[in-house]
Structures are given as C-alpha cells and as structure tokens.
Length: 363
Image 1 (cartoon, rainbow, N blue to C red):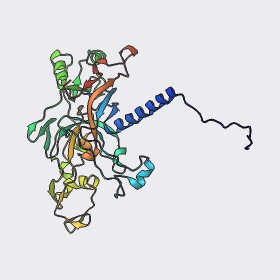
Image 2: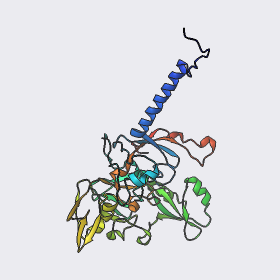
Image 3: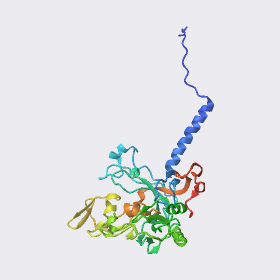
Image 4: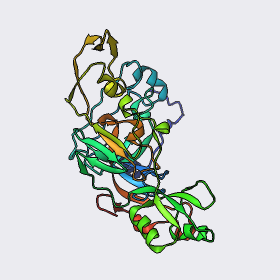
C-alpha cells in the first residue's frame, strides 16, 4: 500500500474561459493588424510644406500598398547593424534580398501622390532612407521638359493639379498693413527680400490672380527660381545650365530600355547605372566596361519615374535627387485619414472637412 506524502500538487495558473476568449481575440486582431499594415496599408503624417496646398501640414494620409503591389522586405532583419552584412544598397554591393513586389491592381500613373523612399544617400539600405510624399509627373518612356515653370510631357503641356503653388514676389505700398495681408490670405511661409516692403510667398495661380485683381499690393509677379550657380543637378554635365523652372529635355528610362554607351553618352547615365542599377562602370582607352566586360550598350533593369512637389519652389524632388526607381516606391497616398492644425486653438484644431477625403478627386 502506497503511503501519501501529505503534500498537494500545485495547480497551474488558470484563466477563466471568458478571459481566455478575450485574450485570444486580442492576439488574433493584433496579428491581423500587423499583416494589414505590412501588406495593405500604412499611415504617413505630413510635417513639411512641399505639397501645400494640395496637402497640408498636419494631414495624416492613408497609404495604399496593394495598388502598385506590396514591396517585399529588403533586408533579412530590420536592425540597422545588420545592414553591414545584408544591405540592399551599399557600395560595393554585398549580400542582400533582391527587390520584388507582389502583383498590384494598377500601375503608377500621372498625378498619383506617391509614398516613397528618397533615392539618396546611397550608402544606406533603400528602405531605411527618408520617406516622403511627392506627385508623379512623368512615367517610364516619357520625355520631360520644363520651360519657365511650365511642365511639358512628350511635347504637350502637363495637366497641373488645381492647388499647385509657385513663389511670387510681392511689393507692398509704404502704408500697407502687411500683417492684415498675412491673415487675409492665410500666409504661413515666406521670406523678406531686398527692402522692407518686398516679400516672396508661395501662392496658387488663382490666388495670385485674385491678389492682383484686388489691388491689395503694389506689385505681384512670379519669382524666378534658383540660377544654375546654386542649383545642383544629378543628370550630368549637359544639365549644368538647368534650373528649377527650365529643365530638360530628359528621357525617362524604363525596364528593357537600351542606351548606347560611349564616353559622350556615359555622363548622362552614369548616376543611374552606378547608384540604382548597381553596376560597376570603368572607362579604358575610350571604351566603356560594365562589370568588367566591354559594353557598347546597356539595358535598364528598372522602371523610373519623375516626381515633383506641388509647392514647386519650396520642395526637394526629382530635380535635385534624380529619377526615382520603382524599387523606392512604397505605395500610393489614397486619402486624408485625419487632419490637425497644430497652430490653431483647441476648438479649431481639427480640420473636419479634410477627414476621410479622397485624393483621387480634385480639391
């Protein structure tokens, strides 16, 4: 006959059925949310003025990832220290996950507002680069040119968004109430130029025409952009005289687009070939070698896009970064989810009219 030790076994911690069901539901919902955030949507809070007035500082945008196809992970582990071994974009190239994305239901198109990684600097992984919102103005295969701030695509004027802004030089009269002008036209940014009565402000063409017609100022005219002396271009020596307002013509390369390579044409394409196509370029005795092999031509591996900010004179975009490869595109900004004015009082902080506003229709 076995003798009892007199000690009771400890019971494992017990959760009531109701708590277990709630915990299970929470974990499932959390897992689904993570999957949706990765494959379907994301959010972007706008903190700069590069897209004013189409978008406003304080807008929280819903980013649609599945339209263009979700971009797959570009590193094995997201920690920055692993980039040293598994980066997708270091020089020279090292082990990495190849770029690919799931099939989408529509390609990038004209005037889409795109959420992307800025294509620079080139010494860090693509998906670790600064993220921003800009508008597509030229697609793969297009020829882009800008003349006096007027954008031409394939020789035809491009349809601009209604809230496109340019800088205007405004000269006030001696007795004009400048502060009242600021309030009347909700001026949020600008700079004073020579003389205390001259300022540069960004306005839409409609607003500028309204100011001129109202006679509120002595003079208003479109302000010339940066000159070639202070405008850096990544498009080679032939682009040294280009400015923000006078740009191109520029051909946008596409996947399987071939270009001749020689000492004259290489300057135009060198930036893309080295930093985005990730090939090694060498010139020997007036001959071009790609990855150590003599090459008379090169066929591009990616589609490229030209993106601009809607606040044309107060933005960094493809005129400064260069063309944007498809590998840098994350998704499409489809709507304003919420919007807050951080400079307004408590009662006016919420921009209710912008809540859940689609970006697929004009303002």
